[in-house]
Image (cartoon, rainbow, N blue to C red; front, side):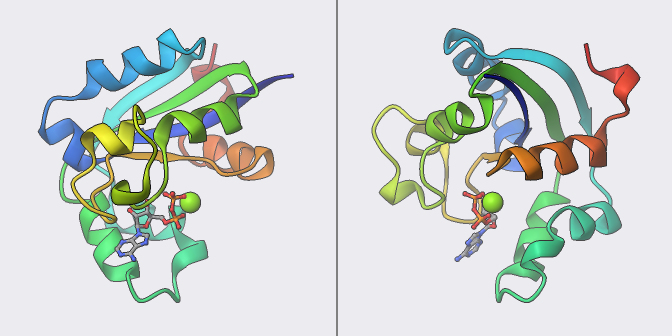
Length: 138
Ligand code: ADP
Ligand code: MG
């Protein structure tokens, strides 16, 4: 089933100039970038995007990290894109991520873990709409 999912290259990834390397992994895995923008997320935007985590002890740290530098936000499209992207990313904690995953190879820590990816088709739809209008995707 062809799906779309939201991917974000986090500030630790843009800061280390890893955008091309990360996008190549998606493309080589058969995912297509159908929307892309680079921007500095506002505090309000980051808090809204991660609202599901607002009661977690790391919420403040997470919002600070996501607004600490530019991010690259993408819509990826392909067969089983949601799960495929999560497989390419690897586990949240890079020390637990499988060999060959983006987080294993690039993440600095459980917080600065280089990429975000939607965790379900429902959340993917919500997250895509949070950052892109329909006319920006194609
Ligand atoms: P994932 O990004 O793998 O879906 P979560 O949704 O659980 O992981 O968490 C969202 C983000 O919050 C993580 O990617 C990471 O940047 C940050 N985070 C999660 N757990 C911690 C933690 N224990 N300490 C600091 N930051 C964390
Ligand atoms: Mg998550």
